Length: 265
Image (cartoon, rainbow, N blue to C red; front, side, top):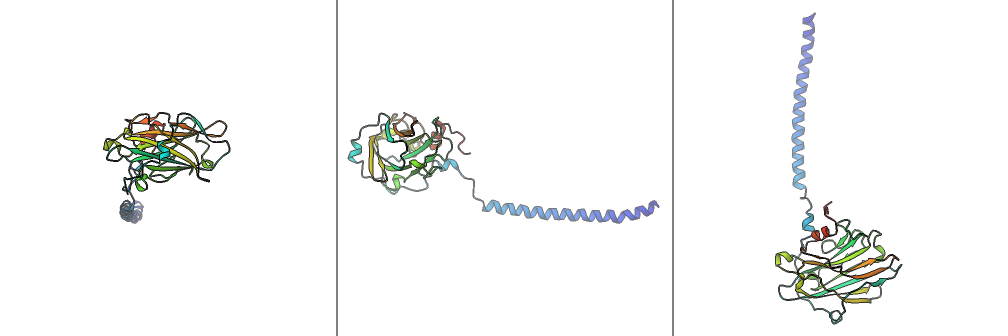
C-alpha cells in the first residue's frame, strides 16, 4: 500500500518540478523584457526640469545693447515719494507700466523688470506669482511682461496689469529691477544713473503719471522700484519703493526675501 502511494506521488512531484522550471523561465523572460522597456523609457525621457536655470538663464542672445535714451519727460519727472491714488474703487481696465533707465559706462548693464504679486502679509505664495522674461504672465494672467529690452529697445521694458483679473489674494504688486549676471560681471545698481516709469491707461492712451524711481542701495544687484497696493475701499494706490534691495540678482533669492523658500514645489 505504501509503495503504491509512492508510485502515485512520483508523477505529481515530477509535474510540479517541471512547472516550477517553466515559471522561472517565464519570470526571467518577463524580467528581461521589463528591463529593456525601462531602458527605452529612460532613453526617450527628457531630463528633469531645472527650476534654478528657469529663473536665472535667458535662452536667447541680445539683439542690441543700444537704445534711444530716455524721453525728456521721464528725465524731468519728479520722484515718487508718497502714496498716490491710481484707480478708484470699482475701476478696472489695463494699465501699462513703461520702465526706462540709462546706465553709466561699458559694458552696458542688462536690467530686467520682475513683477511679483504679494498677499496681504507681503508674502509671495507660489513661484507662479511672478511675471518676468522666462514667464511672461503670472498664474492669474493679470500681469504680463511685454518683452526683454535686449530683444527690443535697450533700456526700456513694460508690464501690463489687467486690474479686473487681479486675484483676491493679491493685495500688492511690486515691480523690481534686477541686473542680469550682475555678480559674474561685477555690476550693481549704482551703474544705473536714472530710472523712471510712465503709467498709461491702455484703453485711451491717457498718461496717469510719470515718476523718477530712485534706487535706495546703489551696491545692490536688485531692488524694488515701485508698487501698487489695494486699499481698504477697493481702490488701487501707487506707492514708492519700500527700500527693499537685494545683494543677489537671482529671482529665487528675491523669492526667499518674500517668504517663499520651498519654491520648487
